[in-house]
Each structure stands twice: as C-alpha cells, then as structure tokens.
Length: 315
Image 1 (cartoon, rainbow, N blue to C red):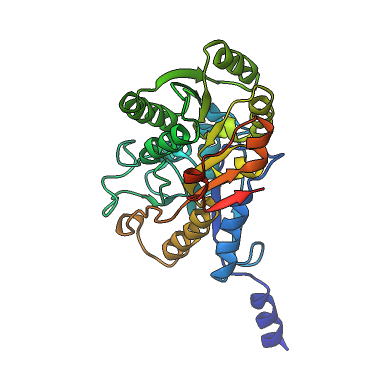
Image 2: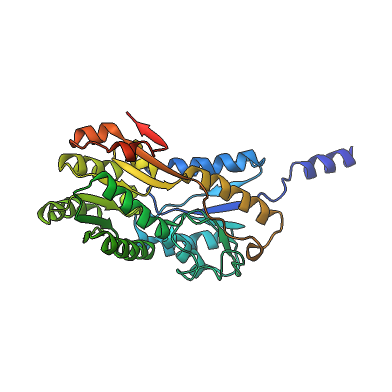
C-alpha cells in the first residue's frame, strides 16, 4: 500500500513543461492570424498547448518602445525560447538576453541589422527565418509602377521608430531613382498620424502609396484601407492580409508559412540543437495578390500583363 501511495504521488508530479515566449508588438485585441499558423506548426510536431508546452504571449499593444520591457519580462519568466516577430522585436530580444535561444519569424536583413553573423552560420543565440522585406522593396515598386503607368510620385508610409522600415525606405528610394519616380516620405509614429499622412500624400500629388509593414501599420489595417479608398490611392502592401482586407495589391512571402516553419526551429532547439548551428532560412515562394474589387472602387484598371502574373486575384 505504501509503495502504491508513493507511486501515485510521483505520477501526479508532471515533468517540466517548456515555456515559449512570443515577443509580439501587436495589440491584445487583435491576435494576428499568422500566430495561429505558428501554433499549428507546433501542433503538427506534437506540441499541445497547455499539455506539453506553454506559450507566453505578452503584448506591446502596438508600441515599439515597449518591446524592450516585454522582452525583459520574457527573460524573467525564464522561457526556454523567445520567438520574435519583426526586426525591432528581434533587436529587443537580443539586447535582453545573450543566453536564451531566439527564433526570428520575420524581419528585414538580419545580417545588415547586426542580429547574426551570416545566414549560413548565424552564431550567438539567434536563428530563424527572414522575410527579406528589404530585398523585396524594389520588386514591389516595379509592380506598382507597371500597375499605375502614370506613376511619377509615390508616397511611402512608414514608421521611423522601426529600424527595419528605415532599411526598406532606403532601398525603395534607390529603386525609385532608377525608375524615374519621386519619393514622398510619409511618417507615422502614432495612430493619430494616419489622417495627416494621407492629407500630405494628396497635397503632394502622390499617385500611389507604398506601405512599409510594421506593428503600428498592421494594427491600423482597416483604417489605411478606408483612407486609401476614400482618396482613390492605389496601394502596395508587404503582407497579403492587407489585400484580403480591401487593399489593392501585395507582393510578399507567405507569412503563415514562415510562422509554421518557425515551429520547426523551436522543436530543434528544445531537442538540444544550438541556434548557432541552425542556418537562417529565406523564403523561396512569393505571392502576388491583387484585389479587383479594390481596383474598381478607386477607378483603376489593372493592366492585363500585370493581372496575368498574379498568384491570387480577389474578385
């Protein structure tokens, strides 16, 4: 009987359940669907939330300056792995810890940002995936130019607080010069800046808007689409979700696929692989999405040579 009681007591003591911290700049009122893809990726690998894994998901509520505080909170929670979204999140996590493994899910050039030594040999405690948002800036502007042939001036909506956005702006300006397109910088630092940014775009006679994705912009997706439609401005986004919500077009990696892939990094790290030994992956497939309903609302006809290249058309 004594043996049975001792066995029963020990069987009720669960083993250590790994804790994964997700450093997310978004708001608690709007959990991005792509985080659902990350959770699904974990489930596919046998990790059931609440059973053999715990996910800590504090929020910066769309404020990039809160990311260091949130990163420090995850360190205090002693999570086994920190998963980051966006360049600013990865930089905040790197500053918060040099020992806890960090898995990037998206972001600009991680080598140029000083996050890793190289894609093949990241070194340190950071690995993961990059969305190569900087390298794609030129392709997005070229597609926008083909879609709006009269384009000679483009407004770039971006958040100066995000270093990744600054890199995208610089690359876009370089490509714009080659295309003979003038760039109008439209800075947004808070939710109250969007109306004034659109007024500046109209006042500056911008023919279209180029959207640089960041947490602040992602959290105001509906408002951006509403203002663009009202002002009849064609828009190029860096994420397909914005086109699904009524934006005109996007050219980007499949973010849900990137987030699912991030789960494999977490799995390998939990099984003992060091981040320094896991090469950083780049996307290989990119989706060009066009929303014809959005085009009709702003009185724009998509050229046939552009439409035929779309991977998905929303009618």
